[in-house]
Structure formats: C-alpha cells, structure tokens
Length: 304
Image 1 (cartoon, one colour):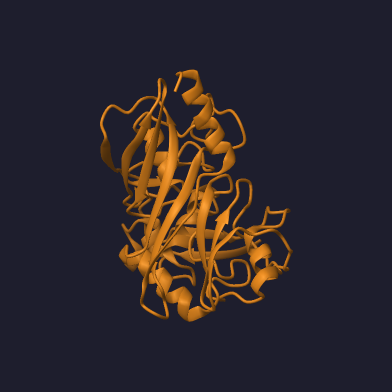
Image 2 (image 1 turned 90 degrees about the vertical axis):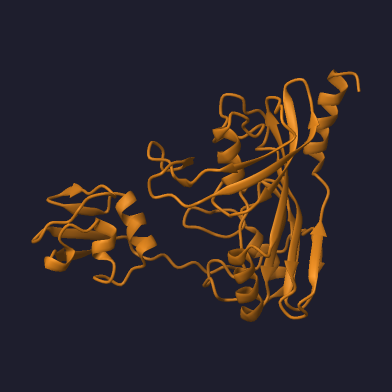
C-alpha cells in the first residue's frame, strides 16, 4: 500500500479534511471521501472523521491501496435482448447476475456476456466497466442500457444527469400503503453504522427523490410502480424501508422478513433519446416468473 504524507499549511487551516486535501493530491474529492470513510486517512496514527477540521502543521497520512487491473473476457451466455443497434443495447437482466466485474467478483458478469455477443463496447469507464452507463443491483431484475461506442455513452450519461432518461420499476413491498401515490424526497449516503449499506442521512449524502404509485393492494403487501427522479445506490430499497414499507425479500434492508432469492424489484420500462437519431424510445419488459408467482400466491390466499 502506497503512503502519501501531507503537512497542512495555512491554506488548509480550519478547512474540512476532504476539502483541505482537494488539489493537494491527485485524487477526486469523491475518491478522497472514500479513503476517509475507509479509515485510510490518519493524523497521529488515528483515522480522521469526515467532518474533521484541519490544523496548521497536521501531518496527514493517506494510505492508497494498489490499483487492481482486471481483464474482462467475453463469456458466452443467454441474453434477453430487448433492443439493439450499432450504438446501444438494452438487456433484461435476470436475478443474480452482477453488471460488471469488481475486485471481489469471481463469477461471469453481464459485461462478460455482452462482450461475447457484440465484441465492442464503449471505453469511457475503463477496462473494468466497458459500456456501463448505469447499474442495477445483482438481485434486481430488468432493463439496463449499455453503450457500444463513446459518443453514445456520453449522450446517454448526459441524459441521466439532466433526467431526460426515465426508469420505471415494479416493487412489491411489505405492508399496505393507504394513499395511492407519493413522493419520497430524502438524501441518501453511506450508512454510518454499516459501510455495506446505504441510508437516509444528512451526512455526506446526495439528494434522492423517488415517486411511487400504488398498482395493487393485498392483505399485507402492496404492489407499486416507482419512478426514479435521481439514481442513487439502492435508492428504491432504501427509500421504501425508510417510510416503513421495505421491498419484499430484500436481504439487506428487510433482513427479518426476507425469504427467497432476492428483493422483488424489477426495472420494467426504460425511456431514452437515441444518441444518433434523436428519437425518443421506450423499451419495456414483463415481470419475471418468480415475481409473478409471488403475486399469484397472494391473490390465491385472498380468493381472487
């Protein structure tokens, strides 16, 4: 692990640690915040907190983990392709499939499968995440769009930022939501008590907005349609747990109630502006078989 030592000067005095280091080292502020959160930024051998204000002559030690490079190999797999042309490909991702490789990934990912299918993806995200414009969780099913060239990638990424790309989900949640629709506007950041989770928090968080509409009610469950207005990690799962209606079978945010192979959350509709033609396009897909089976069982119990 490499070590960087910074002696705080007058320009850093009284400034929060991430802001103070910004420009002093060749890392983005997001990367600095990540290193701080992981306890890799220390003063006097003690990890600093994110809100620490720097003092003149502080000896700040940054431990930098070595960069791990991965070679993403094509792996043939059955892909449920819902749209494809020379610029983009839209796939209905099954439950249990990770989108792209990470340092802890051992099994083939969606990226491996897409590379085997079309042999070429955009390179903006580097060799580990070719073509990946956005992600959905391993156990979330549904639509994901990938770019085949850099121009398409830039155009689609811009649509995510300016919210001209629309993503809609079905979620089955525990509990009966009494109102027909709602908006959850609550910032999301890393859970300070569990670094593997996200949470609604005011600390080091980003704005997050989810709109939802009730589709069907059951005795103890509600089927809802969710519209993402922002794209934070685990956003729907965190927001629904926050208001007391966790997604069914969610092992991370509803562990006491989780049964089955993962959360019943499905990305069923994706609307975007085609990066080459400028045409507005909507791609959709049905709920997966296990999701439908769960709904049938609920209806059967209630004599429907």
